[in-house]
Every structure is written in C-alpha cells, then in structure tokens.
Image 1 (cartoon, rainbow, N blue to C red):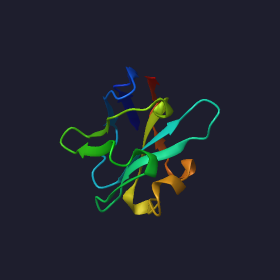
Image 2 (cartoon, one colour):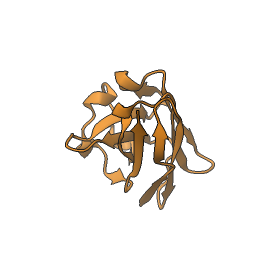
Image 3 (cartoon, helix red, strand yellow):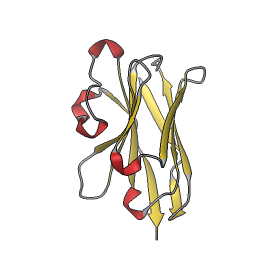
Image 4 (cartoon, rainbow, N blue to C red):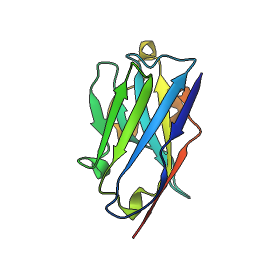
Length: 129
C-alpha cells in the first residue's frame, strides 16, 4: 500500500493550493479517507474526512476554505485549500482506513493518528503573510 501526496508549496496569505494523494496497491473505494496536518512543535491534527458513507467533515478552522474530494476512477484523494492563512502552514498528510474497521466516528478533530493504518509521506504547505 502506498499513498503519495503532491501539490504542496509556498504561497502568500489568501492564495490557493490543490493537494493530491494517489493510492497504489490499495483501492480507496468507499473506505474512510482523510487529510491531516502537522505544524512544527504541534501534534498531528485531522483537517478533513470523507466517511464510509460519503459524508464530508472539516475541522472548524478550515470550514468554508478547504474542500475534500475523491475521484475513484483515478484512485485519488484531493484537498483544495483556498484563502490560505499563515496558520495553515504545516506538512499535510493523507490517510486511509478500510471501511470494515469502522474507525471514522465523531468530529474530524477528535480523530486519532492511530485510527488510520495507511499514510502518505506528507507534502509541505507554507503560507506567508
């Protein structure tokens, strides 16, 4: 199983980026998939999630600015980041867990790192003021 993120970069506040996460050796299908981020000196935190039933959820600080989506024909997960703020600076990771494990419950902010067995290597997003 491999998840490979891309699309990170350096932008000014107010800018936009699109992150992609291509899965190989694994079919995203109806499994639960998510984006996390980890800022320097801080814990990894859930940002957005697509549940087994297709429900999308976001942490409060990114609602209305970030959009999670998935293209099953390309086996790819996306995260569109708009109106970026310096506080969004972090390494962004995609993660997946088989639907049968029923790990995606509650707010994305309460999702634990250990809930997801599959992770990408991360892509850096840097937002300057």
